[in-house]
Image 1 (cartoon, rainbow, N blue to C red):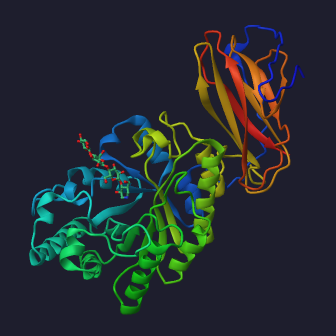
Image 2 (image 1 turned 135 degrees about the vertical axis):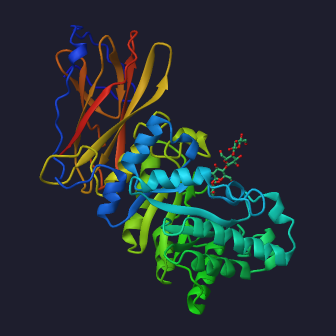
Image 3 (image 1 turned 60 degrees about the vertical axis):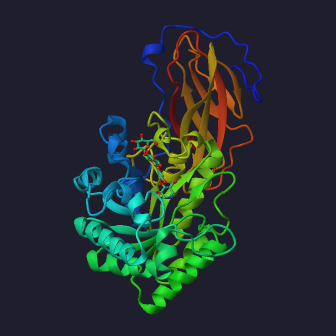
Length: 452
Ligand code: G3I
């Protein structure tokens, strides 16, 4: 071992600079994953009897990284904007299905489920709707639902029939909208009955945000669903959008809240999941959401609100599972692991004990910082080993939160824990290092994680 460091202590070490770089191979030290462990989000969710979906935008389907990530990882899609009222019926009785149809045929051709989003919503509503008087508005609403649901009849797994009809805050009241203000509370029930008649096979959901834990808003939705079930109003599912960040973290009673709705006799779905943040904290929050869904038998699937951070509606918060280059983030590994999947694939015997994920955290004119997140698999571990290979003439100058050892060529760093070796099932830690580029900016290669 050439040296150890922590807290950015400098490694002042001369290492041979033989021209080994081009053919560096990392020893594969992986503990063997299970032969049956699925290697994608969709496949591992399917093994748990669930789907794993994403919001998609038609105008990105032609981008190869976007399409290949979508096709490989997800088995359900939700059009992010293309099935909203302003997209489908911008002027009265003139329907415009082009972009939505594109998503539907992309999904159908690949056996993906489709969530329809959304038939009745106060937002992205064309101006002509808001100016109608009550009777005409009722006709227009029912016509919109009927036309759209019939156009996609038999193709939609679940419809968000009504979206975001309740106010935030403590009132538990309905949100003001043309529908609420002119038709009253009954518009929601009417929308569900009309949707059922138009496509009897689709599951009909009520979908909202800030309803993820028990609070005044979710209590109001709960009361409505309970009333609908008691009176035979056709409702099959409740969607929990689950847009989280530091101000609105995953609630501590998330699972209990999903369960209380499921106990009313409806399915629950996580419909627009995204969690602002990065690294271990983000990965942990994603893990909690997945574990909560898996713990509720009527939680039938999870949809994240986008494929890649770069196209997220809140891109600056990097809330998704793939970064702007479609690289898998620590959050991805955490979700896959929580679903029982394995990022290495193949092999036989035992489940994968840990995984390692690389990200670059900072860059300067002469150097960059790398971070490796180590995530335990479905069992607790007491130690781990990860190899990181840099390409000569790169040199690792500093490390932290780990105990490094070096191969004779000085390019392969074998990192072991420095007090952070014990991880609960699904839990994560990280170590970091600074790479002096010396003109070579290629990304370090991170080998498999070996647990002990
Ligand atoms: O496509 C037009 C483009 O032609 C135009 O140049 C540009 C100028 O603003 O606008 C583009 O449309 C935008 C559209 O996203 C597509 O990017 C709209 O302005 C913008 O308002 C729209 O935002 C969407 C938002 O809903 C609208 O409320 C987001 O993409 C979408 O992620 C977001 O999704 C909602 C769910 O439907 C309901 N739950 C909350 C969730 C997040 O806000």
